Image (cartoon, rainbow, N blue to C red; front, side, top):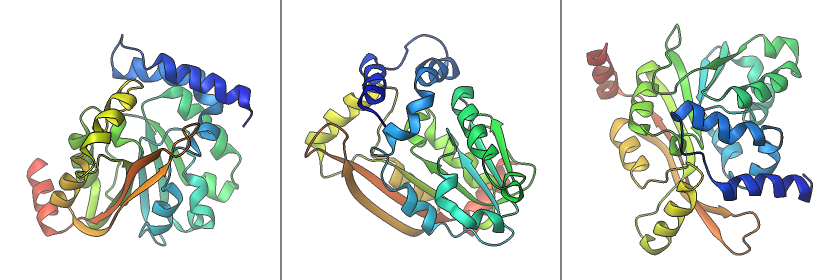
Amino acid sequence: MSLGADARILLHLLRGAPRRGDHVQRLQNFYAPQAQGYDAFRERLLQGRRELIERLPAGIGERVVELGAGTGRNLEFFGDRLRRFASVELVDLCPPLLAMAKQRVDRLDAEIACKIRLIEGDATEFRPAHGVDCVYFSYALTMIPDWRRAIDNAIDMLVPGGSLAVVDFHLPPDAWLSNGFWRRWFAHDGVWLSGAHLPYLRHRLDTVYCAQRYGVAPYLPGVKLPYYLFIGRKGVAASNEASRHD
């Protein structure tokens, strides 16, 4: 990505997220001007996505859903594994980002592309026609105001034994001094960091994998951004709770 393109993205970030309109309108107004350069700039910012995808326990004939899929960049981390899935549904509220996802899907092999469905929808409300085997969020929970509802919805759509995976920014409990800075920094752009994601995920699911890491911050030498990876399995208790919601 060119320095000029980076500068345009940085300018939008410095201006911050719009304050007017509902959540959908704010997302569209903020990301529409960034859509073309979205992936290239955030490639260096959003760490751990490839690792999460590689660790996903999704196999042959299974149904996969990404909530808050944006431009569909994570599809490329699956590689040839996409051929094995029965279906992949990408859900996002922001039409400009979904338009970029459509361009990406259109470039795929027809055998793979026919399995992928793009859906304009809310991660807290979308429900697939059938139960799915794997749901994942990639830097999406911090952009969803009611993130607990999004997690609950994801768990409810999973079949018993299905997997929920998340990679996102994090507020480590032992870094209270820097946490305040990062919370204010990201809130300016409509990203709401929380230290409560992991405890809630562990409460609702059987933990399969969990790691807390630090990644680089573009144009901020030496600055490290905390993030986490989590993969959990829907057990009996979560399945029973989901049945009470139906």
